[in-house]
Length: 399
Image 1 (cartoon, rainbow, N blue to C red):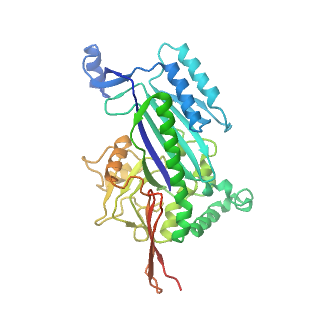
Image 2 (cartoon, helix red, strand yellow):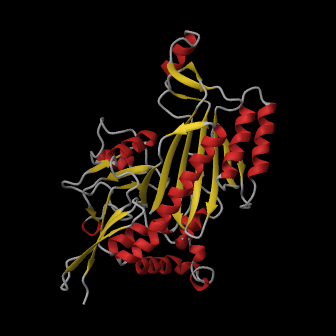
């Protein structure tokens, strides 16, 4: 499980209306033949690039972000921190400022990924700024991915990681089972991450508003679980090279160690006979696959979320929504889980999920542990006072 927070911001200053070609061959032809008269109405931001970059550097520093992982201009990587240098924000931003002065026109899209750590979590912050964008899309978008630092395999005891890599998955899974098998243990593991994520989003929004003169919407937080295609040992796990993958699934230094536990999360919950609800299932690139709404899905009763099984398996009255544009799209289409009315995936998928989550923004994953056992059942409800975490947990009454 990881948390993803999404924050959209707009600049206070005015914009210009521009016409861009539709993203089809016919659309591009019509745009050319009519000298730009026919096309899509978009907005162009009017900020001065050099000043915007300097203000952005100050805003990130104010929020405590000094470790830049990568920078891409128009989807081309121009900086990658392969040595995990801790304080490279200033030189990276100065290099961008220098570049902006040397080119006739700065690239349309800037993507910057930064990393932050504390005793609770590891956070990857993806900032995307578009000079030209659709009218209904914000020019400045932040996505913050929060990972549980306790479950980074480099933090396992030395005999479980450095001395015996082949046993890392077994030891990590055992540790997760021990931490998550009771309501209190589960709460102590996951609740602090949600709180720290909220604090980080608040700092980011405030610093960007102050430095860049922006306004935006409240951050929406989604609990996400990864559905791997197959069960793999740590040594066999890879990462994605493409920039279309979420930052926590790219080939950045340290990412593989920090995210390996995501492959074990669903199997551990299944062993604990858990039910999950209000959760987004993503593939190994972080792309939406399946959203589980309020009706809980009992993991012990379906193998749909188990590696190697059919993702289209759940049947019945579950309030599920499948998406395309992911690793399982072909299978979902063959099993008729997709229809012409389904969202196409990508940004549209996230919009649909947020709509389905209306009224439960900042709610955490609802997890029920339980099985019908000779000892009967005992039920406990745990509500954390922050107002953002609500766990309803059922555990076996073992005698």
